[in-house]
Length: 286
Image 1 (spheres, rainbow, N blue to C red):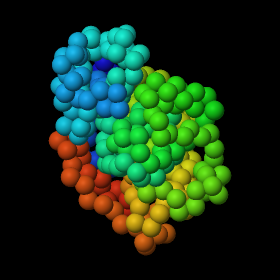
Image 2 (cartoon, rainbow, N blue to C red):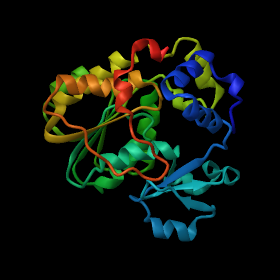
Image 3 (cartoon, rainbow, N blue to C red):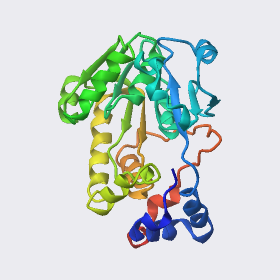
Image 4 (tube, rainbow, N blue to C red):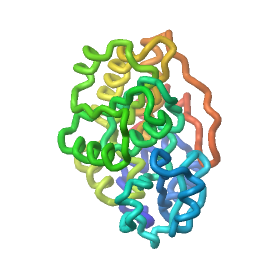
């Protein structure tokens, strides 16, 4: 599905044009008319990739940044196949596969997925841990936690504890406890505009940037208290907003000189962060 550019909020378009410049903005706008890509990730806790590819009824193409992720043809409709209900794979946006890959959880580690529902990144983290160590999958939302529990059970995660707590409460229980923490932070969801018009309407009717940077920075601050010395935090959002990405990271690093940004090898199709956006004049972001 492609999105008609006329459906995108003018406020959003003007902001992106201001920070990108004319040339890059044109390419950005054209991307909304491109066909959406669909992805699934094989559950290696139940079946290895090679075996699944032998029995798969779908035409699959490797996703460059995911060890076990594949593009599929929308017409195949894998959510209707028995393999889906057996938990052999998880339906996931291709871009959403990258954060858990970068976290790179290993067997025996203690890991926190702080904003875990509905569980896509949790299942990937657990696959990397191979049933060893401890994975705490937390979400503050009582409604979304139901989907998280369902997926933890369906995908056979044996070393995973599901919690429905505030970050403040978790800090009291897990001080300096985790080797790695994933923060897939709540955000304004601008990256979801291509997926459906509901995300666009939500943005227009109040779910803009607003208080998200404050919430996101708080999540980082709480995570700092739960991370072991030498640990790793992966921070991700599904939005383009510099206020929720580069600027949040910059503010956190200003407060915590004991942290450093890690350089990652960018896969094909990925673009690096823009440090210059962290210092953009506020007027340029409107």
